[in-house]
Image 1 (spheres, rainbow, N blue to C red):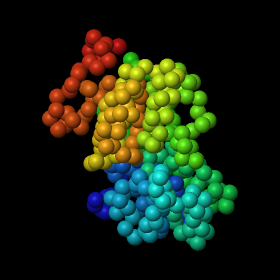
Image 2 (cartoon, rainbow, N blue to C red):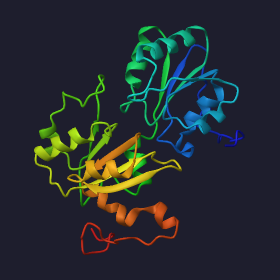
Image 3 (cartoon, rainbow, N blue to C red):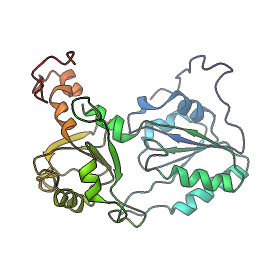
Image 4 (cartoon, rainbow, N blue to C red):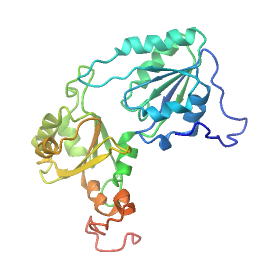
Amino acid sequence: MSESLTLPAGPVGGWPELQPGWVWLCGAGPGDPGLLTLHAVNGLRQADVVIYDALVQEDVLSWAPEAEHIYAGKRGGKPSAKQRDISLRLVELAQEGKRVLRLKGGDPFVFGRGGEEAQTLIQHGVPVRIIPGISAGIGGLAYAGIPVTHRDVNQSVTFVTGHDQSGNTPGSLNWKAIAEGAQVLVIYMGMKHVAQISGALLDAGRPADEPVAVVSQATTPDQKVLETTLGRMVEDIAGSGMEPPAILCIGRSVLMRQVLDWQGLAAGEAPRNLDPLGRGRPAEVS
């Protein structure tokens, strides 16, 4: 990746300055470095230290060539830094007068522990700036050709984490209520507990033939997409060899991939179905 990217003139008053002793909590997006925001690039250019997590692409760090790069990834089932240690390390670096960029995959406030880290910093008197990022549950699905909202499918979308602080399926979730109320359901970090999740949704009345998509390594060159159904999801995932990180999408919006697989179209593939929702009329007719 080129390190010569030039930021445009920027907003009135110029780009924000990352001051010594500050921490910017920044979303790096779902994977593709091109999905970083300009504020993120601006922060990378100024940082003395970049603390990055496991979902941040290494190419992104080339935009901070003079900074110290500290890995602080947390991956389920693998040796990981403790959250308390990460948060207090941010405090320590800021108190040393460093300009700190905390770079997190996706959006730091969407199942990213950004709220915990920001609260710790503020409790210790460290000033912060929050830089949102594109969440994988939206951007990752868009790269797979799946819109999380569509007027003919849903007027709401429900985002759920597949595990809680203990690493287990969240016991506080009312899966019956979710099954009954979620027109489209997007599940982060759900691969480890996919059998429990699918079982809970089926037991709560979701149809076994409901469309499901699994998107792993979203927006990266290694992206894989599996289209299946709720009833076959566990078996098909096991047979696919797909591994985390992955996003699960459950609902009829998954059918839109049959016409909106834009990466497949760019590679010369024909649309599988121009009217996957069976509207029987052109898309521009409301």
